[in-house]
Length: 345
Ligand code: SF4
Image (tube, rainbow, N blue to C red; front, side, top):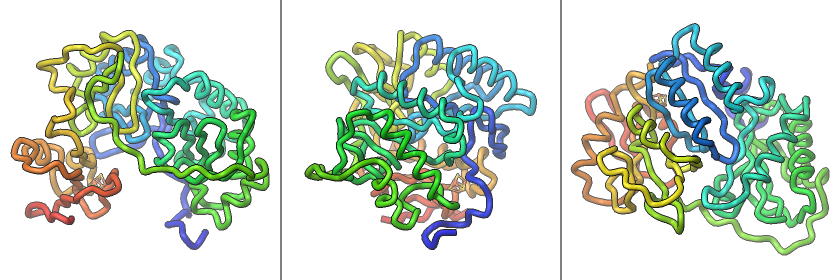
């Protein structure tokens, strides 16, 4: 075990679409969507699967993926079949390693698809941890991917290496292979002693002036040119909200638990977040009750009640226990105590 890593006696437990996690409210499936882009048919497949097999809602994750909760014991097989038919499960062996986030307003889906195909074609890379992450684009580089691309610049563990790559797909595969070879029991490159330097040796020669990587700025809901960003309160779509989003020809998931859709649609009355001035912006919550057995409160219900009285715009994260799962950097904490909440600035 590396000195900086937590207990790694067990494999990482990131859920997948097949490797369903058993939560307190039933099975939890995480469906990887590399680059976040879904066709109308694919999105409908997922939310119809949630209606038929899960609790009907959809969770948007901080890695621009989708989650279905409340799956029964026999549901995962049926879910996998539906996803495979929709092209959302191209590799059974690699489903948990297809973690690629691209700029939500960018135009890199073709590159995402090429990297995804190359990762899935490399049999050995099925052994990557489920937490392994590739980012593509400047505005998501600050999410600290194990590997990042900003144009031709190659980033490792969130920092520019000074290497400029002519073939980004080959560079990602080479870097991923090197990480796999040296990772020991680490789940992320930043946890490997001298990990960045050891991957650089395999990928190329740093020669370019380093670019700085700014902290990621969440994309607020609202119109952006000919598309709009739409948020979901606390990152969870109800069945009715998913149905409303299912009317668009395509949509793209963002790492800020929102969705990019074409045009400037009116979604009044849906409860979706469409304005940068919404009090829901910047409010996040862990799963809480009833989905997490460790939770001391129904944090989502409590956070929703609090939003109506909100007086400031500080980012606030609500947690059902001290673990503070999903807490974004820089957020004020509201931590359940069993008798209320403890606020930590
Ligand atoms: S912060 Fe605690 S209560 Fe919330 S999801 Fe994590 S373990 Fe569960």
